[in-house]
Length: 101
Image (tube, rainbow, N blue to C red; front, side, top):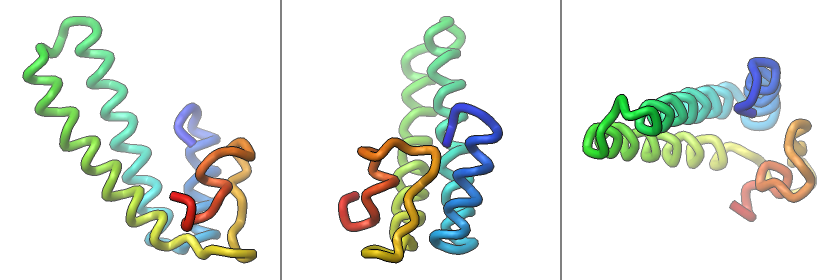
């Protein structure tokens, strides 16, 4: 859901089919925050961010990811109606439904 544009699109499509437009929007927010966090970590690893600059960027992104994840998971139906995520492995939280998150 993060490694390629194709996978990102599939994840958003799955989110929309599983939880509606709000779930798709939350998935997009999660993906964007994850990308921003990866870029910030890369800058920190290359010495372009000092520890304080990285920390000030990291925490808001982690918070946004948590909020987006909650917004997404609260819209996933449980039980037999749950549609497994096609990109995720069988053991992934995306294939166990809302109740196991």
